[in-house]
Image 1 (cartoon, helix red, strand yellow):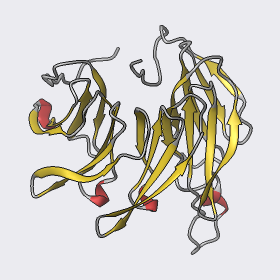
Image 2 (cartoon, rainbow, N blue to C red):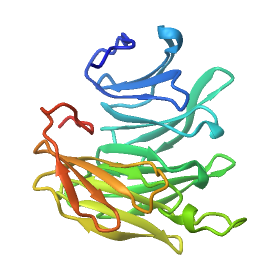
Image 3 (cartoon, rainbow, N blue to C red):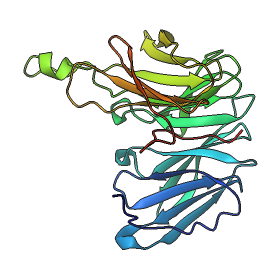
Length: 267
């Protein structure tokens, strides 16, 4: 039986679209159609409002925490076509970077593995995916995959940095093989895998398991096995699990079943 550990009264004035705990599980970030992002300290079952971030001009769809080795850094994306990276310095949260390179709503943001630095993937309704990399001195490098998904991209999720099985086969003293890869889902009913080769992002594989818009995707963490697992959910309320070596659909789960996997986006 599932029990409620804690509840948080966010005082958002409209629908909440996302809520994410930080790496240590002590802070909660929420975002809403009221255009705000809020951060709470939720240690010991309490709730203290740490920050009320206002910089978006439309509903905020998603938030994502960066790895703590880069400090307290949070990304948010919105219907206003903007991505904002926030950072806490000396107890105060301010904009670290604002990206306005999309022509429509930005629906999803996801930080890459810490091995690659501050690397953020952003999926937009304009069909493009942007890759933002912090290069230091307040500068960001931007790469864009145009027409990644027809009609629009709804979700992005990074693969673990280490290639499946490389830790098992790696000779002693050598660094594991790290590859930049992520998965995306879109309104073209497709799940796509992307891989960086020679500094360019290329489509690695296309999965056609859904009959309607793909609303969310998730690349499972590595558990040491020589396989990868990706989950995706669609408009028609199913989840399919695929193993990355063969990408065979393992099962489908009804959203009304004993559990669900994924996240809904508002139309």
